[in-house]
Amino acid sequence: MILRRVLSLATATLLGGALAAGPLTTPAGARTASCPAPATAGRQLRGVWIASVTNIDWPSAPGLSVARQQAEYRRLLDNAVARHLNAVFVQVRPTADAFWPSPYEPWSQYLTGTQGKDPGYDPLAFLVREAHARGLEFHAWMNPYRVSMKADPSLLSPNHPARRHPDWVHPYAGKLYYDPGIPAVRRFVERAMLDAVRRYDIDGVHFDDYFYPYPSGTADFPDDATYAEYGSGSPDKATWRRHNIDLLVREMDRRIHALKPWVKFGVSPFGIWRNKSSDPEGSDTNGLESYTAISADTRGWVKKRWIDYLAPQIYWYIGFTVADYAKLVPWWARQVDGTGVQLYIGQADYREGAAGQAAPWQDPAELSRHLTFDRGYPQVAGDIHFSAKDMDADRIGGVSRMVADHYARPALVPLMPRLGGHAPQRPHPAVTGSTVTWRPVAGAARYAVYRFDGPAAARCGAGDASRIAVTGGTSFTDPTAEPGRDHVYAVTALDRLWHESPAARARRH
Image (cartoon, rainbow, N blue to C red; front, top):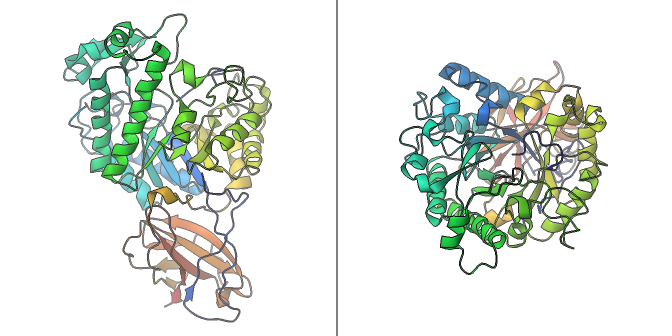
């Protein structure tokens, strides 16, 4: 993830605005307990990154008690639900370590302060369970090749794979990295990451923009010997490096879906693939290129359909000369068009109101303008915000304004037909006062709750239906219910890929 870099820099339809559910189609006057799902139910990925490296978002510091770690995470999720987000991207393998009891890698130091020390519980199991309880999709964010934020291997835990295989790692720019050109390294990191796919009920595997490390000054990543050993057949080192990353992405795509066909695989690359000055297929920009800087052919992965979604970090304002948001969104929209790869936009909430940022980032309307601009591009299926603590800080009110303008009501995650799935049977809800309950439905991962208001509400088909919640539980109490008003509720069931059942009106006890 580009954390504070200034210059370095889908097939679902974004329905825009508040994403209100449309009217149900039951004939006027019908009083049946079964209603079809809203015909224009809004779908939009609304995600937030929760970074653990250097304790950016969670846990807020190493060595916190289990109770405090869990309370902090629950608070982040509750804030996400309050903003009507529907997905979290949680960093669970930040530096070749693990937030679960991995047989391959040590416990992360960001949990306890000591790499390899057992935190006393299974964080990943907890993270997934709490997200799903709130109806949120959970993506396990992993960094394939970064080993340490410091260059000294002796600081790693004694049993760290990088210490057992010192020939696998290189110090570079003050950090330590696995060498992506060594086939044994690639096979190892894939096994380590796939362990989480195999053992946990995650919804996605997520990579950010760290493949080969970003260039530092004039020093090149020190892999000459690796290239000499494994690079035969490549015309040059740059092509060989891109091939190495291509192999990682292609193999992870195949292996994830072989284990669990429904688990999504996505990447959040640096926002520029190539500039038009370097390649006629590139964007009208003049910034760092991921294709050359970190050997990531992100456009190629889209065209070859090796990923399910792409979330380029377009962390620049509208009108920025080097990399204009208003030029990059249309460019990425064209790249995914017709591929089946969904496009989400990485939003720089961390810049909003931050000291030293350009004037547009001091305007509370900038983030909202981004989402308004995106409405013109149906290929844009949603957004992911960096990061959780910055959304919560809301320094100048820009996050609150964006939420009010664009996230006024809950949205469903866009369907991903390439991964299959089907709608469950409808639930059979009941309502007492403002509390709706229902029994679990086979194949349902979460449920959506709708409310009908107005004079025609009792007909469950002629009024204005508003989606008011998505939950992983089997009950919901409406906090906005008005005493004395005859609200009518309906519930739908959704499978793990968000296919929605017909709606069923809740019968009153």
